[in-house]
Image (spheres, rainbow, N blue to C red):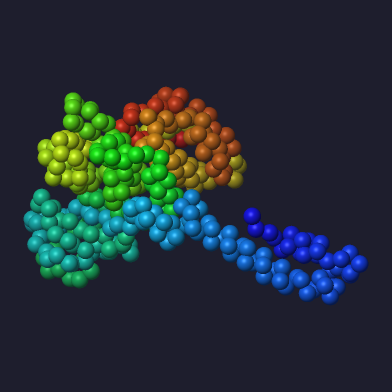
Length: 355
C-alpha cells in the first residue's frame, strides 16, 4: 500500500526525460531524494497509525481504548490477600489494629481486618509477586507483646495486569458469538470480564432444567481459592437460588466450582554433558517443565480435556543447557501421555531424576 524510499525514487526518476542526468549525485537526483525520504517516513508513520487503529494489531493504551468501545475493559493488576495469624507468648491471638504493616525480604503486607477468626493481610505489591510467600513475617513497627506473626494461606491471588494478547482474544471473541439472555456466550463474556476469572467452562442444564454449572480457572490459569469461588458465586447467583439477585437471569440456579488439580510426578533418566553441574541442570529442567504445564493450563477453557504429552516433556528436557540425553520418562509412573478430566488441570508435583 505504501511505497519505500527506493520505490519512490524509482518512480520519480522515471518521470524525468532520459536525456537528463539522473545518476546518484546529479542535480535532479539530489533534488528529489529529500522529498522521497520525507514521503517514505510519512508512509511509515501512516502504516504505524493503521496498526494502532485496529483491534487485531493495536497494543497498549490503543488496544485498551479500542476494546472499551465494545464494553471490554482491560483487567487491572490486583493485590493478593492472605490469611495469617498473630500470636502472643502464650499462643493466644494477639489483638492488633488494622493498618499495621509487616514485611519480609522486601515484600510488605498491611493488616486489613479479620475474617472467620483469622487475620487478613493485604500485599502492598500489586501482581503475582504477592502470592509467592507464606511463613513468618516481621512487624515494621514495634508491637508490644507480639510473639509470632505468620502468613498461612492465600485468600485471593494477586494478579498482573491483563496482557495485550489475552485482552485481544476477548475482544475478537466478542464478534464471533451472539450474546443474549443467559446463553452460554452471555455467561462466558460476563465471567471472563471478572477480575478473578482467567478461563471458564459453562455447562447448561447440568442438573435438570434451569440449572447451570460454572467451572473456572483464575487469571494465572490455576485453581482459584475458596474466596474467589465464593466471589463468583455471589456475583452470578447468591446461594444458588435462581432468584435474580446476581447477574444470572431469573430462574437460573447457578453452581460455581473451581477446577481440580492433578499432581504430576515426572521421572526420567538423564545423561549430562561432562562439564554440567547436576543441581543447576535439574533446577533449570524443573523450571522448563513448570513452564510447559503452565502453557497446557492456559488452553484449558478452549479444550474438551487436557493432555500432558511425554514427547513435549522430553523436548523441554533436551532443550535445557547441560543435557546430553533423556530416557525412560514417565508421568505418575506411566510411560505415556497423561489425559485428565474436563474440569482438571495439571500441576507439577515433583521431578525425580536418575543420572
